[in-house]
Image (cartoon, rainbow over all chains, first blue to last red; front, side):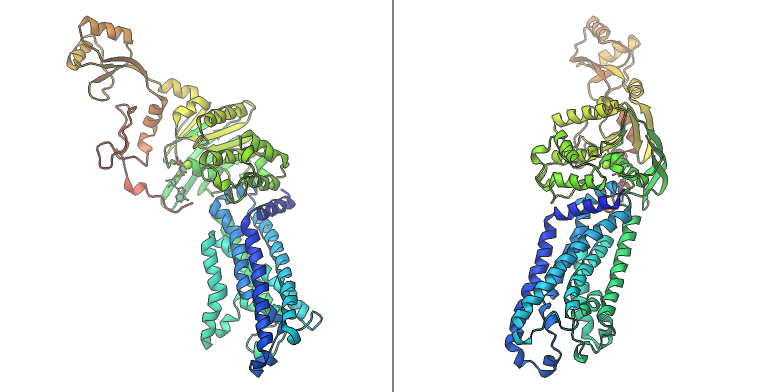
Length: 258
Length: 337
Ligand SMILES: Nc1ncnc2c1ncn2[C@@H]1O[C@H](COP(=O)(O)OP(=O)(O)OP(=O)(O)O)[C@@H](O)[C@H]1O
Ligand SMILES: [Mg+2]
């Protein structure tokens, strides 16, 4: 069976369910709107910020601050793309049509990841331009050092997060369970770990913490003193997590009864 | 042609399918019968490589299911549970399956029309009734115009017109030389559709026979007599050398091998009042129940027992009551799907 046929089929699947558009639209809108709001606030209150913060200020990263919540929608997108196959029973039809587990998984991942990447890039550019417009004199431009990398990084980050969610969801075969685990992993665990000095270093190696480095442009000591990696190193750590989740998902899909 | 060779499936300690070997031949409708929990659906899932056998194998034209290129063009299946995304329209559910196997798009509309779903093709399948969902499943099985078709309880939820339709569809497909494998609990349904019969109970093969042979061997005919003078009637029959074969419930006798005319005349000669004198034919259902009686796992409670279920009036005397062998330890279904 031709892999292109699997891709066409997966594209039809993803574009014909409502969850795809609402999760991705939410990811984009929440990130852009929250980033814009925070940029406006920061612009108005910049002079009252402590000097250390003013020095370390990263206008690019600031315009992406809506990602904190936008990423949840990306996780839900990934979890639902895979989880809904199980909750609806569609997985049995899908596997009967494409019994090669690897091809089915790869087709699904390729289509969903490409879509998340496109939406992520749009989110990155929109957040950036709107945020900079609202930051006034504290803003930066695409031409500045590292800025374009960070904006594109938003797309890469969102795409990787979606793959991570799909891998975890494939392992758990349940949307709700996958979403709870992913949210605790991405939103709650980093906070818990950074409460205690002894565990703070561990938090750096969580997938989203490491991956976020790609969206920063200022490597001031105040910001990154503890992080033992640069932007690409951080992204690399995230890629390892994602690869592990996908491998786990593949093993579950290929070994367990559907 | 489908071949099963020592197919076995265990879920933990529970053996759902136990060393099944049989062949499903082209040009015939093969009925796959067994009581609830006999392992029919599990066997069919293994045929599609959805469940992994604990041991044994299924070959489809000599190949494993996963080795088939564009499998929907070779094998079409209707599974027991819903296997479509409810948030997607009927059309799109079938379209994505068609695309994965290189089946032309116009075929989607064709099969939807064939099963009578054309008017709701663009509706989300979530809102479909049981019978409509069943028709959608049948449409997906027909999508690739396959040589082998498997239906897991296709009449489930269909209206009388739908039942007639699927019956004729299966016969028609078999007449075209295709292999049709269809599961059911209802022998009476199979008697109308199937050419060949495979019966399983508790995962084990109980019968692999042609429908004609099964009917020949199992349709017992007898005459039922009912009389307010039962004792007298028994004496008269005894004197005439006729032994009743069954005494199903109070006041009735079942007599084998003697015609109703003869029995009526005999009773009249002895001035015995008859309330009933009726020729009967034991249904195939009874034969099926007799065959699987020992392997029925999920009995209803016996009549009279607490929480009694409806008595089955057709139950012949020599079949133990449903509930006779109730085994609570066996009735737990672990895990969900
Ligand atoms: N995923 C599973 N996990 C554990 N046990 C299972 C699973 N699937 C089926 N079983 C068990 O295997 C046995 C056979 O089930 P199966 O669904 O194949 O029966 P069936 O013949 O299709 O029954 P029915 O006529 O009710 O549809 C049952 O005892 C059931 O409890
Ligand atoms: Mg079943």
